[in-house]
Image (cartoon, rainbow, N blue to C red; front, top):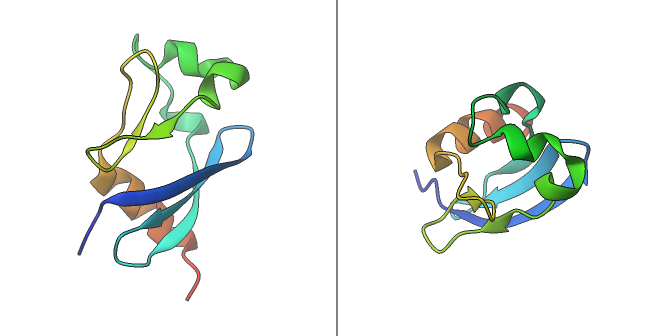
Amino acid sequence: MNYTVIHARHVKDYTIWLRFADGTEGDVDLTDELWGPVFEPLKDPEFFRQFQVAEYGTLAWPNGADLAPEFLYSRARVTAKP
């Protein structure tokens, strides 16, 4: 499996649609994942939307916050479209 995020777009609130290198795609709701000092700024919806697909294949924000691509993949597979 290839957990590399290749495309992402904001859907609504704290939900992001992701596509991975192996073709898996789906929405990931991060509402319940934004805890701890590095994720506190992401609770501001405007800041949350500033994510980018990092060169190392996951989502990253300007303050250095990022999420393990394996975690995102496991969450996206729940909602993946065939």
